[in-house]
Length: 158
Picture 1 (tube, rainbow, N blue to C red):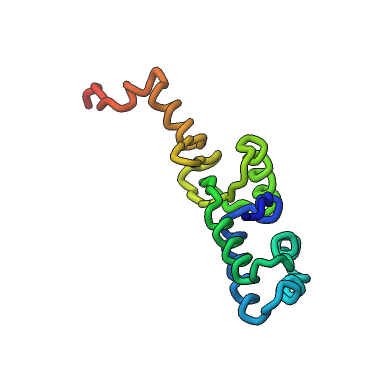
Picture 2: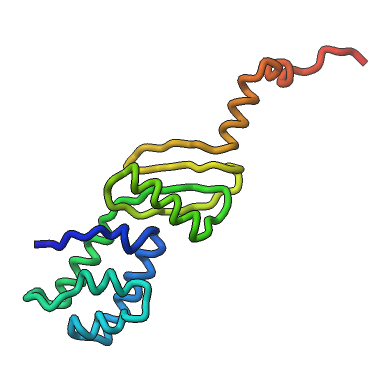
């Protein structure tokens, strides 16, 4: 029976997952028992995840790792496009906010696009919302009473 843990307590972004799986693949080559693998992760940020997942059960270490990889790769992605690269504090804030609304495990897939000026574009499970400053400005310009006059050529003679 597959284990059930809340991966979002350990990993927040698609990049975190990629880093973890790379580290796991490298450690797996050198360590052949669950205890050796857990010990190899002792000084890493992923120690809590690996020590929660890997145990001395009847399942082989390879089976446990394969199941962990499968579950991690099946996590849904919440894609956020921001105008600037987020720092870790912003990532933590965005992840906490999304977690309180989604109430499920997911990973953030962060993208940067300066043309949105500010705000964010959000995509999750086929739904898309654009909450950007560029969209707000465009909407304000096209709905402004003078916008029709601004787009027409001037009728003044020279």
